[in-house]
Length: 238
Image 1 (cartoon, rainbow, N blue to C red):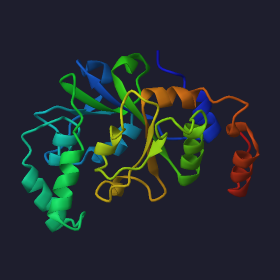
Image 2 (image 1 turned 90 degrees about the vertical axis):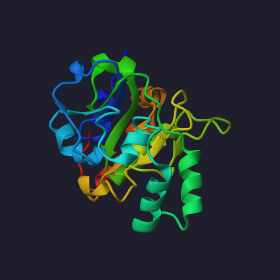
Image 3 (image 1 turned 180 degrees about the horizontal axis):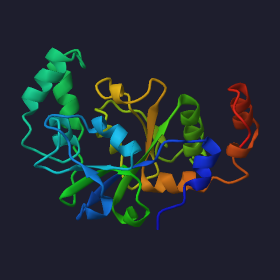
Image 4 (image 1 turned 180 degrees about the vertical axis):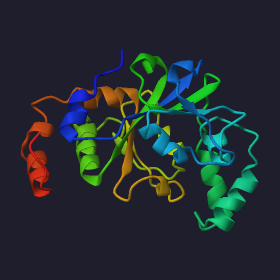
């Protein structure tokens, strides 16, 4: 059963829907659905998500080449062409050698089913969820980062990471989907045009989502630092 995020959303005053990344056998429960344009970015669908619609990706129809590889697991993508584009045209690494090493070091997400669905969270589809993303301001990001650290010990896997990757790749760029971990996302210049200037993503695994949803009145969400920050922003008490 999906953990209930309602208290977390209330205490953080989040107005945008939470976005789920689903690997599912049937797209029907996610309707209404939108399809990617040819070569289009996953995040071109942000406004559709805000309207309650879900982006549907398959190996046959996945938008840009990067999403084909990093989200849909397509091995047919020409890595050399991708490296040429990312280095020669976009200057994302100082050399093709470094870029190729990075591409080969980051295995793409391997779908278990035929359909990748990205859109507002669906409580009844929790079994197929792989990650959940919060669209947040820097202040809300700071609270989520604190929440991610709340139960983390010094010998545990890093609770928050910020890897180099495309925006869509950051939706599953954890050390492992099986551990409680979060990724600071929306750091890809190519996709940020689809978000507001003060918005980032905080993307979490299922187990980290559960931890965040379980933050209670003994946590920082009800204490002075968070309350004082909201006061400093001129925001009302929650």
